[in-house]
Length: 307
Image (cartoon, rainbow, N blue to C red; front, side):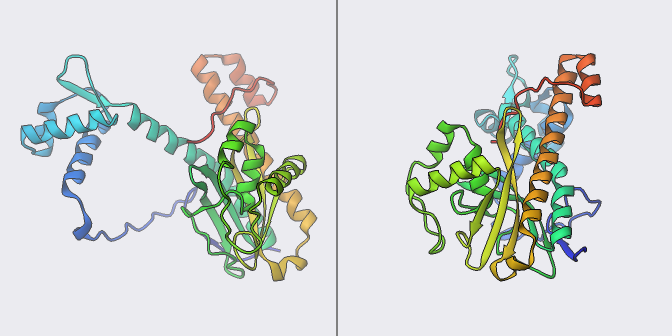
């Protein structure tokens, strides 16, 4: 049985999002001009001189120079050794790489969260680790069951959500302990706020491969989540299915869990294969490229966590 769905993110579709209205009262003109300078340098693909920037953007030479030096100081541009030309810097490249990785993750996961939402008629989520918790990267919700308040871009607690606990349980010990170093906030009266109890739960999550959240983050809502593991088993993301407590009984929970684990495994395999293809191409290893394409290679490069 399929269900009507609302696609919350347009990733992977041909739809062109409508550009939001901008309130000119809050536009910082100096920042806007500095970003124009950055964009001008980035789009050219070669070392750009101060004179070119001045001519193209019609800026006073002193103003353009200040913007360039500010962008160099922040790492978004790099001043060449001749002192007269500029190109993109390490911070710009880091942002671009992160955007590429996140886009690849979204595109790999989208068919699976669409499938889960359609199959069970409940909201399916994709989340990644952030400095202050877990952030929803993509979501597909059904019109029939608008289950939760969470939206794409919203941050939630790691310890109170199925997404977060699925990631926490599979982090390296040192990183997990660093995340748990501090008080655990209470989101509802059912949130686990005791460190010892949470650690026991995370051990169970790691053993069985999935996590649950029974009204621990939002009253009346329950989630089942599982990690997307890459490389040596690092949880780069997680997927979850959200349902209202009152509708849980009508869902085949064993099937929900199995389908969720099937979905996260499929995404993990796809991401690992993509990473391996890039790795093999970078090495110029045609044999590995062939083996990856055929699915016969056993070598797996380490996939770095998202930052």
